[in-house]
Length: 139
Image 1 (tube, rainbow, N blue to C red):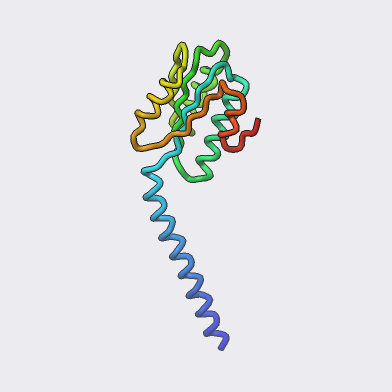
Image 2: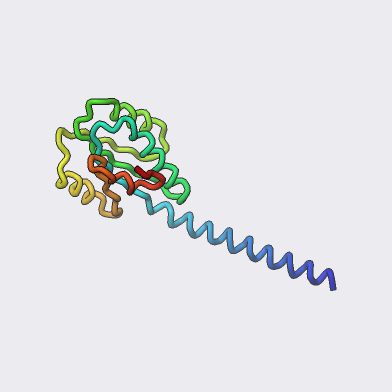
């Protein structure tokens, strides 16, 4: 009787492991196509920018998806651009930085329209409480 119970438990365990392996393979094929994409509008955000980008990176890593971030910078006079360049070189995410004299809503919509396959999350950090849209960030 005891050997039969052992074989039954072993069979269930192997079946469960097989289901997990197959599910992982299917999900891995789906992940290659999808990415999380954010469009951030900044202006003099040197104190928060690194935290915002790292929070997005952690969120994407936990979801198991690649991360793309497009930053539209409105003439920052501080080290915002330097911080983004540093993070861009680390390779944790696909980071595109675009410097503009003035960022209008039309600019954000134009960059979002360029991404036919994705629907980016647009966050204007110049507006108070807009950073609440970033996972793990509560202002």
